[in-house]
Length: 170
Image (cartoon, rainbow, N blue to C red):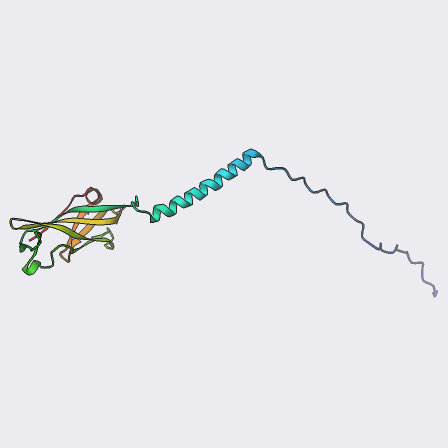
C-alpha cells in the first residue's frame, strides 16, 4: 500500500455572481378603445340610475307594490245620529264611530295594514261609514278585514284592490 492518494479531480470555483437573465420588455399599454370606453361608461351609468330608481321606488309615495283598500261599513242596529250630523253606535255597538280602527290581515294571518272608518252618514236607522286603508301590500292570495274587534271578512285580491269591501254589523 502506498501513502499517496490518487489525483483528485478539480472543480472550477463557483462564479462570483449568478449569470444575469436579460429583462423582458414590459408590454406596451394599449390605449382604451373608444367603443370599450363608451360601453363601460354606459354600464356604470345604467347601474347608478338603477340604484337610484330602486331607492326612490322603495321609499317614495305611490309605491307600485301597494294599494288602498276602500269600501263601506254599515251599522244596522244601535245606530244613532250625533250632534255633528254624523252617527255612531250605542249600547253594545258603542265601539263603532268615526275613527274606529280597521285592520287588514294577509293570507298568513299577519297584520299588514291599518286604517279607520270615516265620514259617517246616518240614514233612517243605519249608519254608513267609508272604509279606507292605505298602503296595503299587493301579492296576497286573499285579505281579511276587521272593523274594531268584530271579526274578519275575507276578500279576494281582486275584490280588495278594486274597492269592493262591504261589511255590516247589527
